[in-house]
Each structure stands twice: as structure tokens, then as C-alpha cells.
Length: 210
Image (cartoon, rainbow, N blue to C red):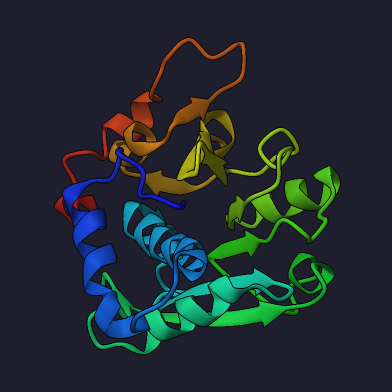
């Protein structure tokens, strides 16, 4: 039976409980997909993108690669008055059937969610990362291949892992609380610090605290 992870913050747990009014009643199988959507929404609250002055500055675009029920729940969140805006950015959910549309800038986004059945190569992930796209996945080798955050089921509990060295390498401003919430923040063997200094420096930024 699916259950909630014990590492939730009060904010995340409260959001999950209140989304009953958004998603409606559902079975436990659907709850996993609903919770992934809530996690994606919460990740967006813990990360800032350096795109002021661009045509994306007033939006927070989440692209889902291929088909997954998670997309349906993300769209419901984006349409509800309580969750449609994150730090004055309007949340927009889009789908993409070909990752090359993102690589070639035919489609732009802040967050890309790659379902387990979708295949994205290491080279493709590397190019996407240079565009400052937060790369989320749920495949076993996603972090090893260059992904940034990966969902996993451990003993019927949904958790997420963070590739700390990857996420810190690009132009994100990340609240260190996000790293602390992860089951395991992976990092390169050459990394000496648990949390890079430039991430710690942003902890006092009130805009980053949910």
C-alpha cells in the first residue's frame, strides 16, 4: 500500500492534504501521481531562475515529456487559484513528444519532467541542463545520466533524490532546505562540502522560504 514519506515538511504535507479539494477523491494508485505533481509544484517554490527581463520572467513553465497521469494533476494545480501562481509567476503546464523541441529551442521551459517510460540520453540531458532547465525524472539511472532530481519508491514510500553536484553547476538559486528534504543528495566524489557555499548564502532570502 502506498504511503507518505516521513520526510515531508509541514508545508508540503499541508499542501498535499488541501489538494483533495483540487484533485477530488481518488484511489491509492492515483495518489502516487498526485503526490508527484505536488512535489513538482513544491520544487518550483524552492528554486529560482535567473531570467528577469526575459519573456519567461512572469511564467513558470513545466513541460512533461510524453504522456503520464502526473500531467493531468499538474494542470489541475495550475488552474486552481490557490496553486496557480508561484512567486508572482503563473504556472503553465505543457506537453512535449520530442525532446529535440527543447534542445532546438522550439519549446522553452523551467522544469522538465521525464516519466520512466521516456528515454533521454546523457548527451541530451547535458544540453538541456545548459539551458537552465530543472531536470526531473523517475528512472533508475536518471541521476547518473545527468538528471537533477529523481523520484523513487522505497518500501512503498515515494521519495526523491537530488544530484547535488549537477543542480549546483548551473544558474539556479536553490534553497538548501530542498537538499535537506531529499532522501540522498548525491554529489561527485571530488566534492568536499555537503552544501555548496553559494546555496547556503541564499538561505536568508525570504522569497525562497515557503
